[in-house]
Image (cartoon, rainbow, N blue to C red; front, side, top):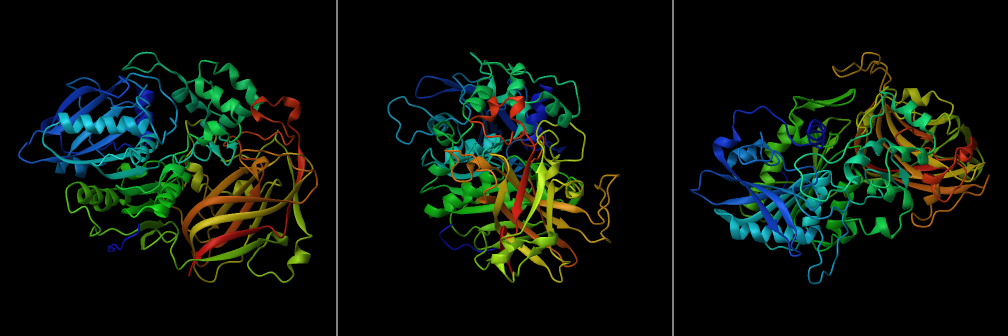
Length: 622
């Protein structure tokens, strides 16, 4: 921000819960305090969108409108059917607001054709539509047809609804005063189904959710998920073989599966579905929220905040907590990700002290810079405490470089870089025996727990390179981006590169309640951050190119931001590998134009090298 502020369907319902909508027992019945109204709102092209409005029964005062737009259904349908909780949290519900839920175009009870990540049209003419125009038209209708409004509108959403909340910033409606995109997708080639060009195979089952179109409004699911008849996803995908063999589960009627296969590169199809590049000169107040261990959408929150900050002079803040996807909207006493515990009542405190304050100030209060919230409210996942900053990354943070040296050493000081550059560690990468991303034997809809998982199982494999510091003599705080600048070579013509940042606990670390029975926190290798790049995209995500066999080549990999203190007595470790299965699909390591069309014979084991002048550049806060 540019001004100064003071600091201080069973499957469906499971999915909605997993995407972060709070499910909580509260001594408050919505139907006792709110009237429900279901309407269809006409868009400028004549399509009607199903919309549910909950208005306070107390009409003695005026209320702002808080709206979310969703592809996941505005259920429950029916005038006598009520949600158990309204809005982002129970505090906003109890204090009184007009809450609006809308099925987006082409989904559930709304008319029209659904377009997955519908492209934004900057200069719409006539009856041209996008999600920004649908938002504008909805707000206009609500202000004209809903009583007891104060004329201010706010939007929020988590995950895909977060994308629609981000999209609302482009509606340019003067009544929209506050928007909170939470776990929002920023660009579909870097969030969710792709990471730097690598296809996230672990999301494959979710293709059913987004790929099947419907012709008419429906209050029941028109799609189904494939029955895989196994609980072992690693073995299922390994047995399935090349990606083309998965066509038997999704046919041509699954539009999204066809799009994934037909557009393996960052071409115009994906580029125009990005929302980040359009976020210029934003006017409403914005609070971007995300989880530092969000496996689905970590790229989006950081990049949405940063992009808005570059050109806007609006209130724009960032909140990142020790959460997985949508945890901040749930209520649980102990906040943990997998085996690692971070503290008590973290989500509830955020809901009460941050989220409620934000919306109340801009929708009911002064709506100015006097709001007592910091620019960046960030949880240190090593110290397990909140920090407030005037900027993100903190202005006082500095860049420090560590080299992937000989003898598994992670070195800050290098005596002779030219000599060091000649040496390398090497390993055989076999796509037919890929490195697992988790020790757990499971079949998940989307993976989450792995973001803090113990990485000892990987460190002990010959196809994973390990580099680590000595035991730290003082705390080391990383606060910002991480850039891996690898120098590599391969005997093949294609390869993926995975970099993991790991906090190695001391031998006397005590177990948490959440620590799995077969594990111990003694010497636990906690993954703090990880990322992958498909090597063919090292120079351009639009124009892939093969590796020249045995030629030393630079591959740069940007990891998402970290806010983590590696405490005295711990060690900082880096792992480098080339398979990460079945989180991502297998790279044949033989260059083919489209890996979705690769044949079994294309998959070959190759020798990879990582040279000792490879380096990791951290953002360090002294």
